[in-house]
Image (tube, rainbow, N blue to C red; front, side, top):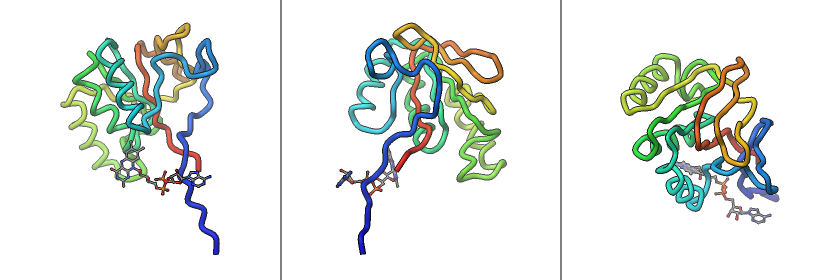
Amino acid sequence: MLVLATGSTPFVPPMRGVTGDAAGFKKRLFLFRTLDDCQTIIAHAVQAREAAVIGNGLLGLEAARGLPSRSAAVHDVHLMSYLMEQQLDVAAGTMLRRTLERLGLHVHFEKQTTAVLGNGYVAGLALRDGSTLDCGLVVTAEGLAP
Ligand SMILES: Cc1cc2nc3c(=O)[nH]c(=O)nc-3n(C[C@H](O)[C@H](O)[C@H](O)COP(=O)(O)OP(=O)(O)OC[C@H]3O[C@@H](n4cnc5c(N)ncnc54)[C@H](O)[C@@H]3O)c2cc1C
């Protein structure tokens, strides 16, 4: 028998504007995966007036919960109609939303990010409904690819 258990890599869904001038991500767009990711996010969050987290499973919410003490405003951009829809029912997701809002998060439901705005540096997000969200730092935690 052969077991392949080689872990996973972060999945970044197709969005315009993810890459910057160099081959890598636009500056101040971060994954949330390793200790290095955490330290880099913390270092930049203190300068960001507004921050956004895309993807609100366990990791996205952990990242969002850690940001309010460091950025002036933190937005949680959620594709579905309530939080942690994979793990919770509507009632529990609503309770969680209230708790997180009391802790300073701004939660946006049924919003799909189509583009990361900004020239070289993150300046905001464009959403499928035509609206935009100003932010100077983005963490994406939208699942994994094996
Ligand atoms: C920020 C963060 C916080 C988390 N917090 C929690 C938590 O609180 N509770 C919880 O239950 N889970 C948590 N998780 C999830 C948990 O870490 C993963 O579910 C778990 O590590 C997955 O285990 P795995 O063995 O599948 O993969 P991994 O732990 O990634 O292990 C895969 C291993 O395979 C090795 N490998 C890769 N490619 C090859 C190759 N070609 N040949 C040989 N070896 C290879 C890698 O070096 C690695 O050692 C967290 C994850 C993250 C990123």
